[in-house]
Each structure stands twice: as structure tokens, then as C-alpha cells.
Length: 149
Image (tube, rainbow, N blue to C red; front, side, top):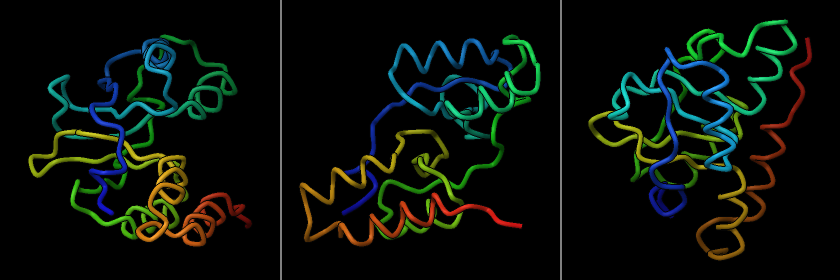
């Protein structure tokens, strides 16, 4: 199975200049937990991601205002995959980077989708011959492994 078959297409995006409040509103409106951060709203150049976890940790917990820019609180330079990447490549990125979501970009670097760990789980039920439940479970375990000193 390829990333293009797993991904949620045309996700909500924002730019680094937008506020954390705007990113949170976009998450609410689109019912999503991640917003890719792009150079411009034509979705070129994925420069980061902001997640539903980044906002409370990097904004609220640090006493910052909701008007702080996304560029100040995003995770920069996320690993991305191409639409023709196989499921194993997606799982590898998630496990190695310990991320629950991966951005999908086209050959021109435009954001075209997002794959969440829930998409992997759903695919393992729908197409178990292509997406192993065991591999998904291992990926989720590696994503969630504590970062011990």
C-alpha cells in the first residue's frame, strides 16, 4: 500500500507568520491534530508542523500568548514522504522520529496530504494483507517509547 492510499488529502495548512491561535482555530475547524506549516498558502515548501500537543506545551506551559507565531512554536524540518512511498517507509519515519503523523509532499515539495497513526490502524483492518497489524502495533509502540536519559 502506498502513502497516497493512506493519506488524508489536502490538509489544512498555515504559514510561519500566522499565530498559534489561528493554527488552533484551523485544527478545530478541520477537526485535525496537525497543521503542516508551509512557505506560502500555495502549500509550497513544508517548513514545519504544529500539533495539538505543541500548542499547550510550547505556548501555554511556557506562558506565551496565543498571538505567538507558528514559526516560533512549530517543529521545524519534518520528515516527509512522497505519495508513492510504501507503508513500511511511512512506519519507519513515524517510529524513528517518534511522530504520530507524517506529511506527504509531491515532487515539487507541495503538501498534498497527511498520514496519521490512525490511518495505519484503519488500513490494517481494511487491507491486512498489505498493512500488517503487527507492524502497526510495533510502530505505535516505538512512537510512544519514552525518551529516557
